[in-house]
Image (cartoon, rainbow, N blue to C red; front, side, top):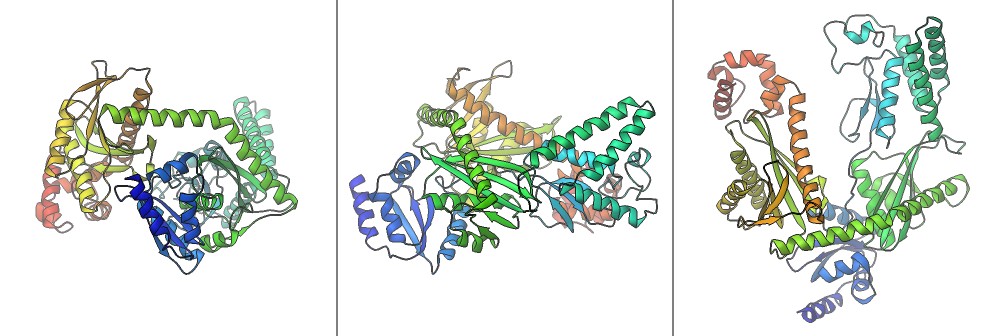
Length: 591
């Protein structure tokens, strides 16, 4: 069979043109497992099957049974196509960012009454504002915002209150809801805050020193100590940000180090001549160095704000990257910026050197656990696990969560939340609804199903999930994590309800426990997020058929939950269509 595959690939390679384009590698199931691009498709594809390959590249080549390619006019077109296909298929061998969170920024809004706050999703549409960051150290960003909000009496509330609040009475707000505010005072506050966030700390330090002296003279030593600590925080924060540059540069800089089939990338965030922080990530190198670095940089900016300029090493095609990102991308050859690039590369080397043994050990453990679980459950393959858990409040307001692990690594882009209908009154019904909704969507959208479904529970939960899958005519293996009488997980149940003991000191137990804890955390956090919106919002969020638009329409029409409960079906139908109004009417009766 392997000889037939090799012969098929050899014959196909003869027909590949020497043109730019994107190629897609497929496994025996016809699933795309890797997407790449090349200036010369023929040469690039031949390199996989004729040259010596090691590490994860060798694993990729061993999985390939076929390939396809799409010819493009230019290298930029092939890059755009490649990234589009990677996002569409999420191939197992392409770079998956482990740390997919976005970094926080400090936002100073330019509203009539400005606010200073932490924001993460800087790519979403927002009102006019100024952003400072990113801040890889979230604690430092919060400390900075809290300090500035205490020094400057900016508006603190999301929406203006109807009366003066506590912040006004303790001198941390000018009372924008009731008081006339001097525009010049507001402009001066804004100017001083912007100056500080750009690295000029003289005005604020002087202000704090004067306040500290006044507090000390008034024998308010507690206040004086608090101000002294704030001064110390400023000194520590800014001293860490200082770098030896004479200009107010504003860019991100990418350094790298490659060794033992691993690629370590370090990013320096330079704003206004200050080092706001750095980020490092280490991952398997599959493709040519230029391709891997280009992929990484593009995926990095899917989650983070693009700076004015990007600095990269000569191993990256800066012109191509500049065209794709629509930003200035350069490679420093000499001077301070070249020294800074060398420093980033040195940081990348140090990170990989320090972490290599742990990374290698974790990688081996994951592969061993994957093989052990696959054998225990008699699965043909085990690459993707989808795990489920529910959360509720005293048997009401159920929500569900699904987490995804690819090769025992969390794939947070694939996590899903489920708002469960109000009719659900128990865990089994909640699980059935979530399983049905998830895998009905898998059927309808032709999504690749997982190799294993993992549920939190024993025989009843597995039986319930199997019933739903049988209704959908899907054959997906299921397993459950069963707890003992002390509520501690100690048994793995296969789909035939056979018990497999899990020794607590085994790697399998540890990895399965990580998945169980993660799905539990995810479901609980969704539930808490709903509750944190307030009692009324929570009740409306849990109502069947009520989304954000209908919720706002109900609030606009009735104003309160009490009035909604008092409303007739006909009155509800002035806002909702008949079917939704009937369900909502019944839901309100039960509250």
